[in-house]
Length: 450
Image 1 (cartoon, rainbow, N blue to C red):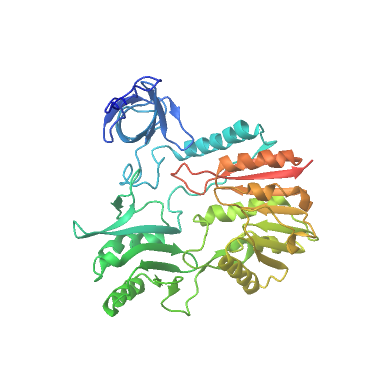
Image 2 (tube, rainbow, N blue to C red):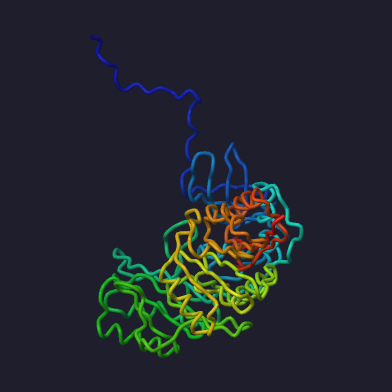
């Protein structure tokens, strides 16, 4: 028997494989246009480059963050020829912090970019355009964010506690002493937080910190080991100085140190108070949230004798204002604790025409008891992966009007295909500028049965 030949290498039939571009390499590029996430797109030697911090028409020097086949991800290190649209970044941490990716673009241009993203998705994926484009819902471009999650990590090698936000394109933490998009009540807490945490005796046991400003200010600390009495005293003194509630998250659910303290937020136009606990989902932009609820009610046009369905209801952000206008609201949510909280919010606001149910809304709507009577109108506010299984059955509920609030134009467009197939027409659509300085797009769409 012939002896096997070892060690031979054969060239793939497609020819030699191009060498990968190493991380850290710098490359001069001309930016052709903007991608849907706000990054600049350049083409060089058969590769497509996505460059954070670059604008169309610019010539930049980009540093490679990663490469996969013919796609290279990079960030702008230097601008040789700037677009006339470019403005100085308002934040000192621009280019390092991963939070605000398009702050070098004026706010009106940010809105135009988001509008194009939504229009492109609806046209390309669903082949439709709304009968009417709504003006963008927008508010102040800075000082809007009422909730923030602050990263905390013990660097054992450097024996240093890192406190800040995640860096762009990595898991590194950028030390932050101020953040222009935070609401003003959280600014002094953010600036003094690192020094306070560094005083704690077990920094390696700290997780993250969550800040919230609503009907009260709250500071939540995630910790993986019990806190000493001395550490607890430091935390309580810090929160007392800032007139903030202290919440701790060890084992189990987050808990307030003072159980008698209430935390929540108001929907002022409807005279509603919603209870909230750190970890619950809440829209971070209070002003745009109120404008969004008002627009949803206007578009849905609920009538006093109607039964309305609110899917992905959360804490009752839409359900409670709706309940003030209709005969009955049925609200459905996947997280049982949120269902309980929403029901409590309805009761505490003296709204007794609401019913709340828990259901897995990633699955097809089953013949649930709450769905049997049908609905005149439906409002849904799903997560980023959309609501495909839900929308497949919406026509069977008898709804003539549907307002879809989306945090991902791609899944909104995908679900629009199904709604059109069921006989709905896209009447209106527009963007919600919930996150200024970022390329994140929220949108609202009104569908009516043909």
